[in-house]
Length: 287
Length: 312
Image (cartoon, rainbow over all chains, first blue to last red; front, top):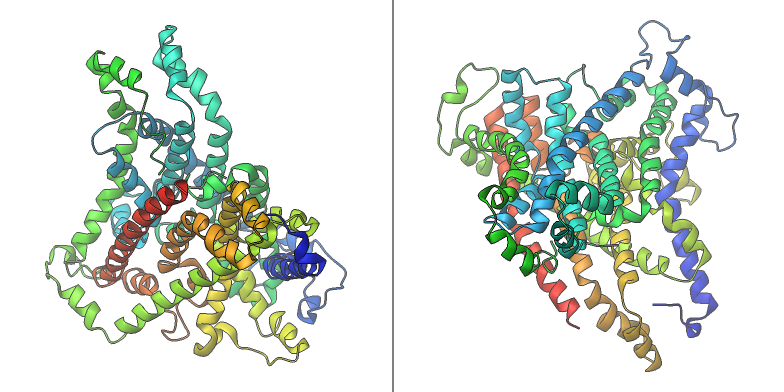
Protein backbone atom coordinates (compact mmCIF):
# COMPACT_ATOMS: atom_id res chain seq x y z
CA UNK A 1 0.00 0.00 0.00
CA UNK A 2 2.63 2.54 -0.92
CA UNK A 3 2.12 5.60 -3.00
CA UNK A 4 2.70 4.69 -6.58
CA UNK A 5 4.86 6.92 -8.70
CA UNK A 6 2.24 6.90 -11.45
CA UNK A 7 -0.21 8.52 -9.07
CA UNK A 8 2.01 11.52 -9.22
CA UNK A 9 2.74 14.39 -6.97
CA UNK A 10 -0.58 16.04 -7.70
CA UNK A 11 -2.60 13.19 -6.17
CA UNK A 12 -0.25 13.13 -3.22
CA UNK A 13 -0.64 16.86 -2.62
CA UNK A 14 -4.41 16.54 -2.96
CA UNK A 15 -4.38 13.77 -0.35
CA UNK A 16 -2.41 15.96 2.03
CA UNK A 17 -4.86 18.80 1.54
CA UNK A 18 -7.79 16.53 2.37
CA UNK A 19 -5.96 15.22 5.43
CA UNK A 20 -5.26 18.74 6.66
CA UNK A 21 -8.92 19.67 6.17
CA UNK A 22 -10.03 16.64 8.17
CA UNK A 23 -7.61 17.40 10.97
CA UNK A 24 -8.77 21.02 11.12
CA UNK A 25 -12.27 19.62 11.71
CA UNK A 26 -10.93 17.17 14.32
CA UNK A 27 -8.64 19.51 16.23
CA UNK A 28 -10.23 22.93 15.87
CA UNK A 29 -12.79 22.44 18.70
CA UNK A 30 -9.94 21.56 21.07
CA UNK A 31 -7.84 24.53 19.96
CA UNK A 32 -10.86 26.78 20.35
CA UNK A 33 -11.51 25.38 23.84
CA UNK A 34 -7.97 26.35 24.84
CA UNK A 35 -8.29 29.80 23.24
CA UNK A 36 -11.56 30.57 25.00
CA UNK A 37 -10.11 29.39 28.32
CA UNK A 38 -7.43 32.08 27.94
CA UNK A 39 -9.86 34.91 27.19
CA UNK A 40 -11.01 37.49 29.69
CA UNK A 41 -14.70 38.26 30.07
CA UNK A 42 -15.05 41.17 27.60
CA UNK A 43 -12.94 39.46 24.92
CA UNK A 44 -15.22 36.43 25.03
CA UNK A 45 -17.78 38.03 22.74
CA UNK A 46 -15.41 39.20 20.02
CA UNK A 47 -14.72 35.80 18.39
CA UNK A 48 -11.21 37.03 17.59
CA UNK A 49 -8.18 34.84 17.44
CA UNK A 50 -5.76 37.57 18.47
CA UNK A 51 -6.13 38.77 22.04
CA UNK A 52 -4.16 39.18 25.25
CA UNK A 53 -4.24 35.79 26.95
CA UNK A 54 -4.98 35.63 30.65
CA UNK A 55 -4.81 32.86 33.21
CA UNK A 56 -7.52 34.41 35.37
CA UNK A 57 -10.05 31.72 34.39
CA UNK A 58 -7.75 28.98 35.63
CA UNK A 59 -7.11 30.92 38.84
CA UNK A 60 -10.84 31.40 39.37
CA UNK A 61 -11.52 27.72 38.85
CA UNK A 62 -8.75 26.46 41.09
CA UNK A 63 -8.67 29.05 43.86
CA UNK A 64 -12.05 30.77 43.70
CA UNK A 65 -13.03 34.03 42.08
CA UNK A 66 -12.26 37.07 44.23
CA UNK A 67 -14.41 39.31 42.03
CA UNK A 68 -17.48 37.08 41.99
CA UNK A 69 -20.51 39.13 42.91
CA UNK A 70 -23.19 37.76 45.19
CA UNK A 71 -25.43 35.33 43.36
CA UNK A 72 -22.83 34.52 40.72
CA UNK A 73 -21.61 30.97 40.94
CA UNK A 74 -17.90 30.97 41.60
CA UNK A 75 -16.32 27.77 40.39
CA UNK A 76 -14.52 26.72 43.54
CA UNK A 77 -16.01 23.24 43.44
CA UNK A 78 -13.77 22.29 40.55
CA UNK A 79 -10.85 20.95 42.65
CA UNK A 80 -13.31 18.84 44.63
CA UNK A 81 -14.97 17.48 41.48
CA UNK A 82 -11.56 16.71 40.06
CA UNK A 83 -10.62 14.79 43.22
CA UNK A 84 -13.94 12.92 43.10
CA UNK A 85 -13.24 11.82 39.52
CA UNK A 86 -9.74 10.79 40.52
CA UNK A 87 -10.85 8.77 43.57
CA UNK A 88 -13.78 7.05 41.85
CA UNK A 89 -11.85 6.17 38.68
CA UNK A 90 -8.69 4.93 40.45
CA UNK A 91 -10.74 2.91 42.92
CA UNK A 92 -12.72 1.33 40.10
CA UNK A 93 -9.56 0.37 38.20
CA UNK A 94 -8.04 -1.07 41.38
CA UNK A 95 -11.08 -3.30 41.98
CA UNK A 96 -11.05 -4.35 38.33
CA UNK A 97 -7.35 -5.25 38.53
CA UNK A 98 -7.77 -7.39 41.65
CA UNK A 99 -10.76 -9.21 40.20
CA UNK A 100 -9.95 -9.07 36.50
CA UNK A 101 -6.31 -10.17 36.26
CA UNK A 102 -6.96 -13.67 37.65
CA UNK A 103 -10.19 -13.92 35.64
CA UNK A 104 -8.41 -12.96 32.42
CA UNK A 105 -5.73 -15.56 33.15
CA UNK A 106 -8.29 -18.30 33.79
CA UNK A 107 -10.18 -17.40 30.60
CA UNK A 108 -6.96 -17.45 28.57
CA UNK A 109 -5.39 -20.63 29.93
CA UNK A 110 -7.90 -23.13 31.22
CA UNK A 111 -10.65 -25.06 29.56
CA UNK A 112 -13.75 -25.27 31.69
CA UNK A 113 -17.48 -25.50 31.21
CA UNK A 114 -19.24 -22.29 30.30
CA UNK A 115 -15.99 -20.46 29.67
CA UNK A 116 -16.98 -18.64 26.49
CA UNK A 117 -20.43 -17.83 27.89
CA UNK A 118 -18.77 -16.29 30.92
CA UNK A 119 -16.35 -14.28 28.81
CA UNK A 120 -19.22 -12.96 26.70
CA UNK A 121 -21.25 -12.10 29.80
CA UNK A 122 -18.40 -9.86 30.93
CA UNK A 123 -18.21 -8.36 27.44
CA UNK A 124 -21.96 -7.74 27.43
CA UNK A 125 -21.48 -5.26 30.32
CA UNK A 126 -19.75 -3.05 27.80
CA UNK A 127 -22.43 -3.26 25.13
CA UNK A 128 -25.67 -3.48 27.12
CA UNK A 129 -27.58 -0.21 27.54
CA UNK A 130 -26.45 0.96 30.98
CA UNK A 131 -29.93 2.06 32.06
CA UNK A 132 -31.12 -1.57 32.30
CA UNK A 133 -28.78 -1.88 35.29
CA UNK A 134 -28.66 1.73 36.47
CA UNK A 135 -32.40 2.32 36.93
CA UNK A 136 -32.90 -0.63 39.32
CA UNK A 137 -29.54 0.15 40.96
CA UNK A 138 -30.78 3.61 41.86
CA UNK A 139 -33.42 1.87 44.00
CA UNK A 140 -31.08 -0.78 45.42
CA UNK A 141 -28.41 1.83 46.25
CA UNK A 142 -30.88 3.85 48.27
CA UNK A 143 -31.90 0.74 50.20
CA UNK A 144 -28.27 -0.22 50.88
CA UNK A 145 -27.09 3.31 51.62
CA UNK A 146 -24.70 3.23 48.65
CA UNK A 147 -26.32 6.15 46.85
CA UNK A 148 -23.90 9.09 46.51
CA UNK A 149 -20.93 7.16 47.94
CA UNK A 150 -17.50 6.55 46.41
CA UNK A 151 -17.89 2.79 46.76
CA UNK A 152 -21.23 2.87 44.98
CA UNK A 153 -19.70 4.70 42.02
CA UNK A 154 -16.61 2.45 41.95
CA UNK A 155 -18.86 -0.62 41.98
CA UNK A 156 -20.95 0.50 39.02
CA UNK A 157 -17.83 1.65 37.12
CA UNK A 158 -17.02 -2.06 36.92
CA UNK A 159 -19.44 -2.12 33.98
CA UNK A 160 -16.86 0.00 32.13
CA UNK A 161 -13.51 -1.08 33.53
CA UNK A 162 -13.89 -4.82 34.12
CA UNK A 163 -14.82 -6.02 30.60
CA UNK A 164 -12.02 -3.90 29.14
CA UNK A 165 -9.39 -5.30 31.51
CA UNK A 166 -10.56 -8.91 31.23
CA UNK A 167 -10.72 -8.95 27.44
CA UNK A 168 -7.54 -7.01 26.74
CA UNK A 169 -5.53 -8.94 29.32
CA UNK A 170 -6.91 -12.22 28.11
CA UNK A 171 -5.52 -11.46 24.66
CA UNK A 172 -2.11 -10.64 26.17
CA UNK A 173 -2.07 -13.88 28.21
CA UNK A 174 -3.00 -15.81 25.08
CA UNK A 175 0.03 -14.35 23.31
CA UNK A 176 2.34 -16.04 25.83
CA UNK A 177 3.06 -19.65 25.07
CA UNK A 178 1.84 -22.04 27.80
CA UNK A 179 5.10 -23.92 27.30
CA UNK A 180 6.88 -21.20 29.29
CA UNK A 181 4.73 -22.00 32.31
CA UNK A 182 5.06 -25.69 31.68
CA UNK A 183 8.84 -25.49 31.61
CA UNK A 184 8.96 -23.46 34.82
CA UNK A 185 6.64 -25.93 36.57
CA UNK A 186 8.85 -28.83 35.54
CA UNK A 187 11.79 -26.94 37.01
CA UNK A 188 9.92 -27.13 40.31
CA UNK A 189 8.56 -23.61 40.63
CA UNK A 190 5.19 -23.25 42.33
CA UNK A 191 2.17 -21.98 40.44
CA UNK A 192 2.26 -18.71 42.40
CA UNK A 193 5.90 -18.19 41.56
CA UNK A 194 5.26 -18.84 37.87
CA UNK A 195 2.30 -16.47 37.81
CA UNK A 196 3.87 -13.54 39.64
CA UNK A 197 7.54 -13.88 38.71
CA UNK A 198 7.30 -15.08 35.11
CA UNK A 199 3.88 -14.24 33.63
CA UNK A 200 3.20 -10.86 35.21
CA UNK A 201 6.46 -9.26 34.04
CA UNK A 202 5.66 -10.46 30.51
CA UNK A 203 2.21 -8.85 30.41
CA UNK A 204 3.08 -5.80 32.50
CA UNK A 205 3.26 -3.21 29.68
CA UNK A 206 -0.07 -4.38 28.28
CA UNK A 207 -1.54 -4.54 31.76
CA UNK A 208 -0.46 -0.99 32.56
CA UNK A 209 -1.88 0.29 29.27
CA UNK A 210 -5.19 -1.51 29.77
CA UNK A 211 -5.46 -0.16 33.32
CA UNK A 212 -4.79 3.39 32.15
CA UNK A 213 -7.35 3.07 29.36
CA UNK A 214 -9.89 1.71 31.85
CA UNK A 215 -9.09 4.73 34.04
CA UNK A 216 -9.75 7.09 31.12
CA UNK A 217 -13.12 5.47 30.34
CA UNK A 218 -14.15 5.56 33.99
CA UNK A 219 -13.09 9.22 34.19
CA UNK A 220 -15.09 10.04 31.05
CA UNK A 221 -18.23 8.31 32.27
CA UNK A 222 -21.18 10.56 32.76
CA UNK A 223 -24.37 8.58 33.21
CA UNK A 224 -23.38 6.56 36.28
CA UNK A 225 -22.46 9.46 38.57
CA UNK A 226 -25.39 11.46 37.13
CA UNK A 227 -27.94 8.87 38.25
CA UNK A 228 -26.22 7.22 41.22
CA UNK A 229 -24.27 10.11 42.73
CA UNK A 230 -25.24 13.37 44.38
CA UNK A 231 -23.22 16.34 45.53
CA UNK A 232 -20.80 14.22 47.62
CA UNK A 233 -19.25 12.35 44.70
CA UNK A 234 -20.02 14.75 41.83
CA UNK A 235 -17.42 14.14 39.13
CA UNK A 236 -16.06 16.66 36.64
CA UNK A 237 -18.24 15.21 33.86
CA UNK A 238 -21.44 15.77 35.82
CA UNK A 239 -20.28 19.12 37.17
CA UNK A 240 -19.35 20.35 33.69
CA UNK A 241 -23.03 20.47 32.74
CA UNK A 242 -23.57 22.99 35.52
CA UNK A 243 -20.82 25.24 34.18
CA UNK A 244 -22.63 25.90 30.91
CA UNK A 245 -26.11 26.35 32.34
CA UNK A 246 -25.14 28.51 35.32
CA UNK A 247 -24.23 31.74 33.54
CA UNK A 248 -23.80 32.86 29.96
CA UNK A 249 -20.79 34.99 30.80
CA UNK A 250 -18.86 32.05 32.21
CA UNK A 251 -18.03 30.26 28.98
CA UNK A 252 -14.36 31.06 29.51
CA UNK A 253 -14.47 29.48 32.98
CA UNK A 254 -16.17 26.44 31.51
CA UNK A 255 -13.52 26.18 28.83
CA UNK A 256 -10.77 26.37 31.44
CA UNK A 257 -12.47 23.63 33.47
CA UNK A 258 -12.80 21.53 30.30
CA UNK A 259 -9.11 21.91 29.51
CA UNK A 260 -8.12 20.84 33.03
CA UNK A 261 -10.59 17.95 33.00
CA UNK A 262 -9.26 16.73 29.62
CA UNK A 263 -5.53 17.02 30.27
CA UNK A 264 -5.17 13.73 32.21
CA UNK A 265 -6.70 11.70 29.36
CA UNK A 266 -4.61 13.39 26.64
CA UNK A 267 -1.37 12.82 28.58
CA UNK A 268 -2.28 9.21 29.46
CA UNK A 269 -3.37 8.41 25.91
CA UNK A 270 -0.13 9.73 24.44
CA UNK A 271 1.86 7.67 26.92
CA UNK A 272 0.20 4.38 25.95
CA UNK A 273 -0.01 5.03 22.21
CA UNK A 274 1.50 1.68 21.21
CA UNK A 275 -1.20 -0.22 23.10
CA UNK A 276 -4.21 1.90 22.20
CA UNK A 277 -5.51 -0.13 19.26
CA UNK A 278 -5.68 -3.39 21.17
CA UNK A 279 -7.19 -1.65 24.18
CA UNK A 280 -9.83 0.24 22.24
CA UNK A 281 -10.89 -2.90 20.38
CA UNK A 282 -10.96 -5.05 23.54
CA UNK A 283 -8.15 -7.24 22.20
CA UNK A 284 -9.87 -7.93 18.88
CA UNK A 285 -7.35 -5.94 16.80
CA UNK A 286 -3.73 -6.52 17.71
CA UNK A 287 -2.27 -3.24 16.48
CA UNK B 1 -12.06 -13.32 20.79
CA UNK B 2 -9.27 -15.10 18.98
CA UNK B 3 -9.60 -18.83 19.12
CA UNK B 4 -6.20 -19.93 17.89
CA UNK B 5 -4.35 -19.29 21.13
CA UNK B 6 -7.01 -20.50 23.57
CA UNK B 7 -6.08 -24.16 23.93
CA UNK B 8 -3.36 -24.97 26.42
CA UNK B 9 -0.76 -27.39 25.18
CA UNK B 10 -1.83 -31.05 25.52
CA UNK B 11 1.03 -31.79 27.92
CA UNK B 12 -0.19 -29.20 30.42
CA UNK B 13 -3.72 -30.57 30.34
CA UNK B 14 -2.56 -34.16 30.66
CA UNK B 15 -0.45 -33.26 33.67
CA UNK B 16 -3.40 -31.57 35.31
CA UNK B 17 -5.64 -34.65 34.98
CA UNK B 18 -3.51 -36.43 37.54
CA UNK B 19 -3.29 -33.50 39.96
CA UNK B 20 -5.21 -33.14 43.24
CA UNK B 21 -8.64 -31.55 43.22
CA UNK B 22 -7.36 -28.23 44.53
CA UNK B 23 -5.29 -27.81 41.39
CA UNK B 24 -8.10 -28.99 39.15
CA UNK B 25 -10.46 -26.52 40.81
CA UNK B 26 -7.95 -23.72 40.25
CA UNK B 27 -9.66 -22.13 37.21
CA UNK B 28 -12.88 -21.84 39.18
CA UNK B 29 -11.11 -20.51 42.26
CA UNK B 30 -9.19 -17.82 40.45
CA UNK B 31 -12.27 -16.65 38.58
CA UNK B 32 -14.40 -16.65 41.75
CA UNK B 33 -13.92 -12.96 42.68
CA UNK B 34 -15.02 -11.97 39.19
CA UNK B 35 -18.06 -14.24 39.51
CA UNK B 36 -19.05 -12.58 42.79
CA UNK B 37 -18.79 -9.18 41.14
CA UNK B 38 -20.81 -10.50 38.21
CA UNK B 39 -23.64 -11.35 40.60
CA UNK B 40 -23.58 -7.78 41.90
CA UNK B 41 -24.22 -6.58 38.36
CA UNK B 42 -26.65 -9.27 37.26
CA UNK B 43 -28.84 -8.88 40.36
CA UNK B 44 -29.95 -5.31 39.49
CA UNK B 45 -30.44 -6.42 35.89
CA UNK B 46 -32.83 -9.17 36.99
CA UNK B 47 -34.56 -6.74 39.36
CA UNK B 48 -34.93 -4.32 36.45
CA UNK B 49 -36.71 -6.93 34.36
CA UNK B 50 -38.92 -7.73 37.36
CA UNK B 51 -39.73 -4.05 38.01
CA UNK B 52 -40.79 -3.67 34.37
CA UNK B 53 -43.75 -5.97 35.13
CA UNK B 54 -44.85 -3.93 38.16
CA UNK B 55 -46.43 -0.53 38.71
CA UNK B 56 -43.24 0.71 40.43
CA UNK B 57 -43.28 4.46 40.94
CA UNK B 58 -40.89 6.25 43.33
CA UNK B 59 -43.69 8.46 44.58
CA UNK B 60 -46.08 5.59 45.42
CA UNK B 61 -44.97 3.47 48.42
CA UNK B 62 -44.91 -0.31 47.97
CA UNK B 63 -45.81 0.03 44.29
CA UNK B 64 -42.89 -2.28 43.40
CA UNK B 65 -45.00 -5.21 44.65
CA UNK B 66 -47.98 -4.38 42.47
CA UNK B 67 -47.77 -6.79 39.56
CA UNK B 68 -49.31 -5.46 36.33
CA UNK B 69 -48.20 -8.03 33.75
CA UNK B 70 -47.33 -6.61 30.35
CA UNK B 71 -49.04 -3.25 30.91
CA UNK B 72 -45.83 -1.20 30.75
CA UNK B 73 -44.83 -2.90 27.49
CA UNK B 74 -48.27 -2.44 25.94
CA UNK B 75 -48.15 1.23 26.90
CA UNK B 76 -44.72 1.62 25.32
CA UNK B 77 -45.73 0.00 22.03
CA UNK B 78 -48.99 1.95 21.82
CA UNK B 79 -47.46 5.27 22.88
CA UNK B 80 -47.88 7.86 20.12
CA UNK B 81 -44.18 8.78 20.37
CA UNK B 82 -42.93 5.19 20.24
CA UNK B 83 -42.51 5.02 16.45
CA UNK B 84 -40.75 8.37 16.46
CA UNK B 85 -38.40 7.21 19.26
CA UNK B 86 -37.61 4.11 17.19
CA UNK B 87 -36.95 6.25 14.12
CA UNK B 88 -34.67 8.70 15.91
CA UNK B 89 -32.74 5.93 17.70
CA UNK B 90 -32.08 4.12 14.41
CA UNK B 91 -31.46 7.28 12.39
CA UNK B 92 -28.84 8.50 14.86
CA UNK B 93 -27.08 5.12 14.94
CA UNK B 94 -27.17 4.39 11.21
CA UNK B 95 -26.11 7.85 10.03
CA UNK B 96 -23.30 8.30 12.53
CA UNK B 97 -21.93 4.76 12.12
CA UNK B 98 -22.13 4.98 8.34
CA UNK B 99 -20.39 8.34 8.03
CA UNK B 100 -17.74 7.41 10.61
CA UNK B 101 -16.97 4.20 8.75
CA UNK B 102 -16.59 5.85 5.33
CA UNK B 103 -14.77 8.95 6.58
CA UNK B 104 -12.56 6.78 8.81
CA UNK B 105 -11.70 4.56 5.84
CA UNK B 106 -10.72 7.55 3.70
CA UNK B 107 -8.69 9.18 6.49
CA UNK B 108 -6.91 5.89 7.30
CA UNK B 109 -5.99 5.27 3.65
CA UNK B 110 -4.66 8.81 3.35
CA UNK B 111 -2.68 8.42 6.58
CA UNK B 112 -1.20 5.15 5.36
CA UNK B 113 1.08 6.89 2.84
CA UNK B 114 4.65 8.01 2.73
CA UNK B 115 3.81 11.59 3.65
CA UNK B 116 5.27 13.93 6.20
CA UNK B 117 1.86 15.50 6.83
CA UNK B 118 0.43 12.07 7.64
CA UNK B 119 3.28 11.25 10.02
CA UNK B 120 2.86 14.50 11.94
CA UNK B 121 -0.93 14.25 12.22
CA UNK B 122 -1.37 10.54 13.10
CA UNK B 123 -0.61 10.83 16.86
CA UNK B 124 -3.29 13.51 17.30
CA UNK B 125 -5.97 11.21 15.87
CA UNK B 126 -6.91 9.98 19.34
CA UNK B 127 -7.65 13.40 20.87
CA UNK B 128 -11.36 13.89 20.06
CA UNK B 129 -12.31 10.42 21.30
CA UNK B 130 -10.24 10.36 24.47
CA UNK B 131 -11.74 13.41 26.17
CA UNK B 132 -15.04 12.94 28.00
CA UNK B 133 -17.98 12.85 25.53
CA UNK B 134 -19.89 15.30 27.73
CA UNK B 135 -17.05 17.80 27.68
CA UNK B 136 -16.47 17.42 23.95
CA UNK B 137 -20.18 18.04 23.40
CA UNK B 138 -20.15 21.12 25.63
CA UNK B 139 -17.30 22.57 23.59
CA UNK B 140 -19.38 22.07 20.43
CA UNK B 141 -22.39 23.55 22.19
CA UNK B 142 -20.28 26.62 22.95
CA UNK B 143 -19.17 26.81 19.33
CA UNK B 144 -22.80 26.63 18.20
CA UNK B 145 -23.89 29.24 20.73
CA UNK B 146 -25.36 32.39 19.09
CA UNK B 147 -23.46 35.06 21.06
CA UNK B 148 -19.99 33.60 21.70
CA UNK B 149 -20.10 30.74 19.16
CA UNK B 150 -17.60 30.53 16.32
CA UNK B 151 -19.44 28.24 13.88
CA UNK B 152 -21.91 30.82 12.56
CA UNK B 153 -19.17 33.43 11.95
CA UNK B 154 -17.27 30.73 10.02
CA UNK B 155 -20.37 29.88 7.96
CA UNK B 156 -20.95 33.59 7.29
CA UNK B 157 -17.32 34.01 6.23
CA UNK B 158 -17.93 31.47 3.47
CA UNK B 159 -21.14 33.26 2.49
CA UNK B 160 -23.42 30.72 4.13
CA UNK B 161 -26.38 31.64 6.35
CA UNK B 162 -26.26 31.18 10.14
CA UNK B 163 -27.75 28.02 11.61
CA UNK B 164 -29.65 27.60 14.85
CA UNK B 165 -28.02 24.17 15.30
CA UNK B 166 -29.50 22.09 18.13
CA UNK B 167 -31.98 24.78 19.14
CA UNK B 168 -34.46 24.00 16.35
CA UNK B 169 -35.93 20.60 15.33
CA UNK B 170 -34.76 20.91 11.69
CA UNK B 171 -31.05 20.81 12.50
CA UNK B 172 -31.02 19.17 15.97
CA UNK B 173 -30.29 15.64 14.72
CA UNK B 174 -27.65 17.00 12.36
CA UNK B 175 -25.96 18.83 15.24
CA UNK B 176 -25.66 15.82 17.56
CA UNK B 177 -24.66 13.46 14.74
CA UNK B 178 -21.98 15.97 13.75
CA UNK B 179 -20.55 15.81 17.28
CA UNK B 180 -20.69 12.00 17.21
CA UNK B 181 -18.85 11.96 13.86
CA UNK B 182 -16.25 14.39 15.19
CA UNK B 183 -15.73 12.28 18.29
CA UNK B 184 -15.65 8.76 16.89
CA UNK B 185 -14.39 8.94 13.29
CA UNK B 186 -10.89 8.64 14.83
CA UNK B 187 -11.90 5.25 16.26
CA UNK B 188 -12.80 3.98 12.79
CA UNK B 189 -9.67 5.51 11.26
CA UNK B 190 -7.41 3.97 13.91
CA UNK B 191 -8.86 0.48 13.45
CA UNK B 192 -8.64 0.65 9.64
CA UNK B 193 -5.10 2.03 9.87
CA UNK B 194 -4.10 -0.88 12.14
CA UNK B 195 -5.64 -3.21 9.56
CA UNK B 196 -3.85 -1.64 6.59
CA UNK B 197 -0.52 -1.79 8.41
CA UNK B 198 -0.98 -5.48 9.24
CA UNK B 199 -1.39 -6.49 5.58
CA UNK B 200 1.33 -8.47 3.84
CA UNK B 201 3.03 -6.59 1.03
CA UNK B 202 3.17 -9.39 -1.54
CA UNK B 203 -0.41 -9.35 -2.93
CA UNK B 204 -0.26 -5.59 -3.39
CA UNK B 205 3.15 -5.78 -5.06
CA UNK B 206 1.78 -8.44 -7.41
CA UNK B 207 -1.26 -6.31 -8.25
CA UNK B 208 1.00 -3.33 -8.92
CA UNK B 209 3.33 -5.32 -11.17
CA UNK B 210 0.30 -6.58 -13.10
CA UNK B 211 -0.78 -2.98 -13.58
CA UNK B 212 -4.05 -3.28 -11.63
CA UNK B 213 -5.96 -0.03 -11.21
CA UNK B 214 -6.46 1.58 -7.80
CA UNK B 215 -10.14 0.58 -7.82
CA UNK B 216 -9.42 -3.00 -8.78
CA UNK B 217 -6.87 -3.39 -5.96
CA UNK B 218 -9.20 -1.66 -3.50
CA UNK B 219 -12.22 -3.81 -4.31
CA UNK B 220 -10.49 -7.16 -4.69
CA UNK B 221 -7.69 -6.93 -2.14
CA UNK B 222 -8.00 -4.09 0.35
CA UNK B 223 -11.71 -4.28 1.09
CA UNK B 224 -11.98 -8.07 1.59
CA UNK B 225 -8.93 -8.01 3.86
CA UNK B 226 -10.39 -5.09 5.81
CA UNK B 227 -13.73 -6.81 6.43
CA UNK B 228 -12.90 -8.07 9.97
CA UNK B 229 -11.76 -4.57 10.94
CA UNK B 230 -14.86 -2.99 9.43
CA UNK B 231 -17.06 -5.37 11.40
CA UNK B 232 -15.23 -4.49 14.64
CA UNK B 233 -15.90 -0.81 13.92
CA UNK B 234 -19.59 -1.52 13.28
CA UNK B 235 -19.83 -3.62 16.48
CA UNK B 236 -18.45 -0.81 18.61
CA UNK B 237 -19.93 2.21 16.88
CA UNK B 238 -23.39 0.87 16.03
CA UNK B 239 -23.94 -0.58 19.52
CA UNK B 240 -22.67 2.57 21.20
CA UNK B 241 -24.66 4.97 19.05
CA UNK B 242 -27.88 2.95 19.50
CA UNK B 243 -27.54 3.67 23.22
CA UNK B 244 -25.90 7.09 22.95
CA UNK B 245 -26.77 9.22 25.95
CA UNK B 246 -23.96 11.63 26.78
CA UNK B 247 -23.89 13.64 23.54
CA UNK B 248 -27.66 14.04 23.25
CA UNK B 249 -28.13 14.79 26.95
CA UNK B 250 -25.34 17.36 27.09
CA UNK B 251 -26.55 19.03 23.90
CA UNK B 252 -30.33 19.29 24.41
CA UNK B 253 -31.49 16.71 27.02
CA UNK B 254 -33.56 15.19 24.21
CA UNK B 255 -35.13 18.44 23.00
CA UNK B 256 -36.23 20.68 21.46
CA UNK B 257 -39.61 19.14 22.31
CA UNK B 258 -39.12 15.43 21.72
CA UNK B 259 -36.91 15.84 18.65
CA UNK B 260 -34.04 13.76 20.05
CA UNK B 261 -35.92 11.45 22.43
CA UNK B 262 -34.25 8.13 21.65
CA UNK B 263 -34.98 4.95 23.64
CA UNK B 264 -32.16 5.79 26.08
CA UNK B 265 -33.34 9.37 26.62
CA UNK B 266 -36.97 8.27 26.99
CA UNK B 267 -36.02 5.62 29.54
CA UNK B 268 -33.93 8.14 31.51
CA UNK B 269 -36.57 10.86 31.44
CA UNK B 270 -39.44 8.54 32.41
CA UNK B 271 -37.70 6.43 35.04
CA UNK B 272 -35.28 8.89 36.64
CA UNK B 273 -36.54 12.42 35.95
CA UNK B 274 -40.27 11.65 36.22
CA UNK B 275 -39.60 8.88 38.79
CA UNK B 276 -41.97 6.52 36.95
CA UNK B 277 -39.47 3.72 37.35
CA UNK B 278 -41.45 0.87 35.80
CA UNK B 279 -42.77 2.88 32.85
CA UNK B 280 -39.29 3.74 31.52
CA UNK B 281 -37.71 0.30 31.89
CA UNK B 282 -39.35 -1.33 28.82
CA UNK B 283 -37.46 1.14 26.58
CA UNK B 284 -34.13 0.14 28.11
CA UNK B 285 -35.02 -3.57 27.94
CA UNK B 286 -36.19 -3.33 24.33
CA UNK B 287 -32.90 -1.61 23.47
CA UNK B 288 -31.06 -4.38 25.31
CA UNK B 289 -32.82 -7.04 23.22
CA UNK B 290 -32.09 -5.20 19.96
CA UNK B 291 -28.42 -4.75 20.87
CA UNK B 292 -28.14 -8.39 21.98
CA UNK B 293 -29.54 -9.74 18.69
CA UNK B 294 -27.52 -7.39 16.46
CA UNK B 295 -24.27 -8.00 18.37
CA UNK B 296 -24.69 -11.81 18.22
CA UNK B 297 -25.15 -11.56 14.47
CA UNK B 298 -22.16 -9.21 14.08
CA UNK B 299 -19.85 -11.33 16.25
CA UNK B 300 -20.68 -14.39 14.12
CA UNK B 301 -20.02 -12.36 10.98
CA UNK B 302 -16.71 -11.22 12.48
CA UNK B 303 -15.65 -14.82 13.09
CA UNK B 304 -16.52 -15.76 9.50
CA UNK B 305 -14.71 -12.72 8.08
CA UNK B 306 -11.60 -13.46 10.15
CA UNK B 307 -11.44 -17.04 8.93
CA UNK B 308 -11.95 -15.89 5.34
CA UNK B 309 -9.33 -13.16 5.65
CA UNK B 310 -6.88 -15.67 7.12
CA UNK B 311 -7.42 -18.10 4.26
CA UNK B 312 -6.86 -15.88 1.26
